[in-house]
Length: 258
Ligand SMILES: [Fe+2]
Image (cartoon, rainbow, N blue to C red; front, side, top):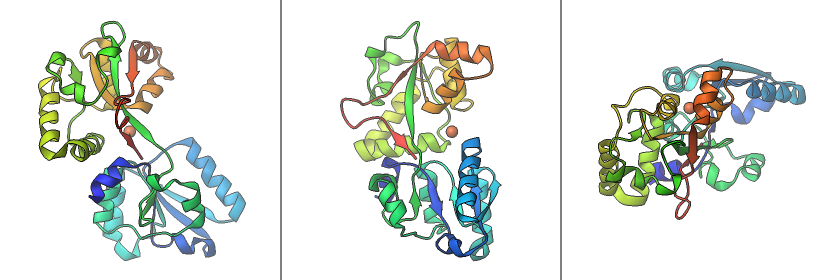
């Protein structure tokens, strides 16, 4: 039940052991799987306001979590920044998190976007959307994730491998809404409709739609936005050939993750 609840909710800051006492410390140690300039600005603003230095260790999410696991109780990590409720759930299962009870966090972050026990707090959201080729697909033909399994789309769907956490969380939401059997049936239907054996990341699926190799693809929305604003003109051209569907507007809404 917990897995399902996490998956249905949002974003991803999570607090470690020394977070609550950081106001007394000279520095706060952050393990971050994000690498954005906007984060640097936040860290600097925090230091300017509090006089507390921010040390950041950047890395791959799974590697950082393994490291925390190895370091155990001696881990210097105060805060971890990562993505995906599925990953947060795994970390929670591994006992990496301690709960935080903060009036500020509870007030500013809606209950649906944080762990009920205060083990993690969401601060940004992504939608797992469906992309289509503007030239040969009429978006009114498809309105839900369920439709991706419709035999009328045989040979048209591109999606990355199921070993990726984004797809695992999407599948968890299908289990929540359709049960395990229904979700398995759906997944089999999607596999039957695949345009190719899964390869590459989300961006490769979108580029597959642009090139015409697939008509439909599943990807997180920000990969599309990133292509639209790419420095590479070919990528911008590719993105312009692609349209976005936010599925399930007539029922539960689009799958959002933290
Ligand atoms: Fe991503």
